[in-house]
Length: 295
Image 1 (tube, one colour):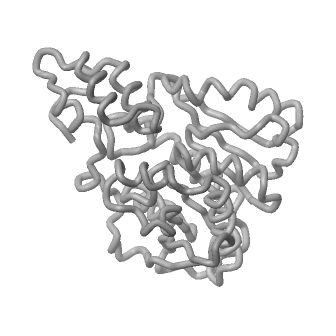
Image 2 (image 1 turned 90 degrees about the vertical axis):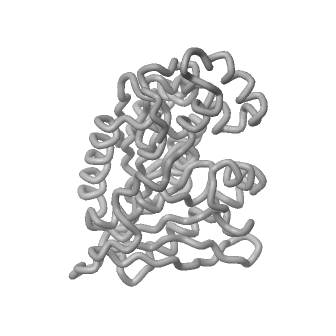
């Protein structure tokens, strides 16, 4: 990561990056607006470098970790007759079938951060599957800017079906006990909410700063929910009160946490929006929740 001190950077810069990362600003407009905050020792290139993910130095569980068996698999896509690639991981010393966890990426494909999260889930005692929704377009291209552009070209409904198909694949996998939950981040958080609505047998759902489902769909939710939000993420957290009201009115099993003074993406340890304390607490809560409902 850049040597810029995070405390030097105004919140407006993080908000601008959020707009850029979610395709509300193109790169040129992002850089133009960023130039307003390039003062003193802060230049536009240094700010850009600071904000972009650093995958090389921030892998917690290496791909070849000897405690895990991790491999890429392909499962059938219900649309178009093709297949979707995913990273399947499990502990090498598993003596019995394990609960399954679908790990859903952000709006840029299966990048190294999400693969790392999938391995963390496996190391915690689950069999995890992290699909790449960009598979029909050639897969995650190696950088997030291109990944975002590619994912924006995919049909939203088809991608949803691909993640539901991942649930069905994992539920019936020989190493899975049939109890499958989902955790997703950003776009993936919205997918976790969607799956809670559309998959009646889903055993647990954990959306991290994910867009909420329509209030009219809340009665369809059967799975217990754990929801993680960031207080500075006004774009997503603004939708929580109405969602919570609907969950309460329909007697749903949920718990929610709003982490103070952290941004959207606070769990992603490859960007400066990462907040170590909030990320570690949210992940511990998530694993405890999955242990309760998937084992």
